[in-house]
Image 1 (cartoon, rainbow, N blue to C red):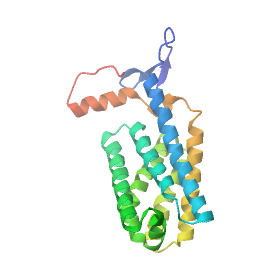
Image 2: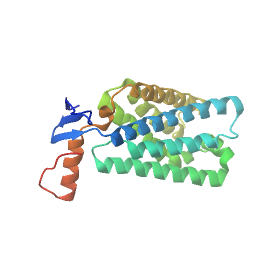
Image 3: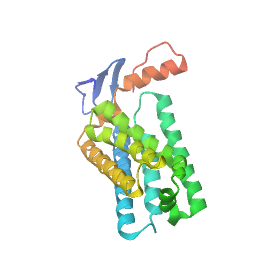
Image 4: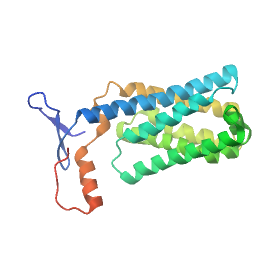
Length: 224
């Protein structure tokens, strides 16, 4: 992370970035908090869904799926990723996975979505992009902060889903791997809350520089 310059008169802190100085504003801090809360909602909803399915069966699990969809969508709205194409790709994966889930709900019914996934693994192809987006967040978190739980999220999701799709894992083994992934995601989220907002925002001068390159502008400007 770039170095911090002393703020004047209680103003937002100023950081010395690679391409110039920038500030972490109240809007930045709200977006970071929103990102962390949204990602935490995904982890809690996933754990609750798996626990409820195990204890009470597949009925009335769809509200947890809605929480997961909304949480991941908001997390991808507020996440800070330097590369715009990668950010857009993760958002498109989320959208494709949500559309696949909606199709599954129409075909099997909201109460039978998870049994259909367990019994007909080909449906994983429809909803898989959603989890690819979640794994992408895990990779981003590991790349930026080298947290071991983040690489666990990144690896366990494709291992569970592709293993089930290929017929190598039973439904019970798949559920166990997904539960471990969700628990690691929750640990990741809880460890993020004490971190300063600047850690998740990153170097805003890099964002400004990349945006200038995208627009074909040659003159440097100070990041906000």
